[in-house]
Length: 269
Ligand SMILES: C[S@@+](CC[C@H](N)C(=O)[O-])C[C@H]1O[C@@H](n2cnc3c(N)ncnc32)[C@H](O)[C@@H]1O
Image 1 (cartoon, rainbow, N blue to C red):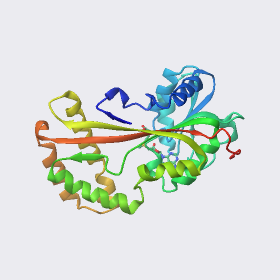
Image 2: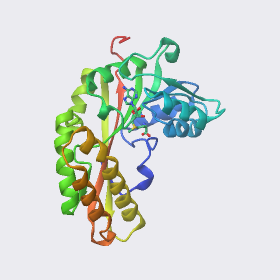
Image 3: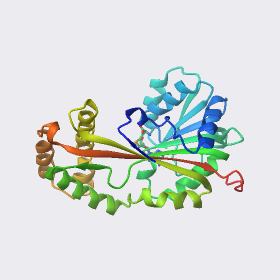
Image 4: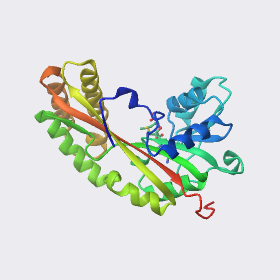
């Protein structure tokens, strides 16, 4: 399914319309006092949003970064149905977090991409879910950004090289197989595309997003991967930032996959 420029869709909880059984399951799962988890939650923006939209759900935000979890806890204040835990997604969740039966829903938004052992992590997520439980993954394709400018092309070529070396490639191609191997079924993926440029506020906003993303990638490419000199990177960014938005054309892409742990799969824990 492909969705273009629907800004409301750019939210992890705007669940996919297909298959209907999955959507109905999510409504039911979040509508009861059943446990859900937002893994790799960072400062917990989506964890809080799940708790706000589904007040009956009990949501556990986890992240390996203790400072992020401290900030997430502060931001959530005394919200009744949210808790946070420092936890590495490569490890099993503690039994107490699974409440005996396992989780109804696991959300993992922009995290799996960065973890080298994706199969191992997906097995952990399947083990944390109860049979029939739902996994929602947000991630990006290998080519998440396209901009018709030579400076963008130069930075992205350096980025491609870095991504290839770090093994972060081809999640889009391989995810289905990883999910099946981990015991998931009914996987559906929405491809979200947002157009950059144009005179619309959306087009301008996504141009700013693209510039921010390229600026955020500087450390990774220049200091970690050394696939481009810092001065050259800065020159390209400056050139790009000075281009009038109306002469820019491009798009930003995201992927959202929903799958269920097979009801009949053996107990994985
Ligand atoms: C790009 S951020 C996404 C944060 C949040 N999900 C969001 O979309 O706003 C990636 C997050 O993954 C976390 N992370 C990285 N490796 C992890 C691991 N092994 N276990 C749990 N969290 C991890 C990082 O600390 C960071 O907060």
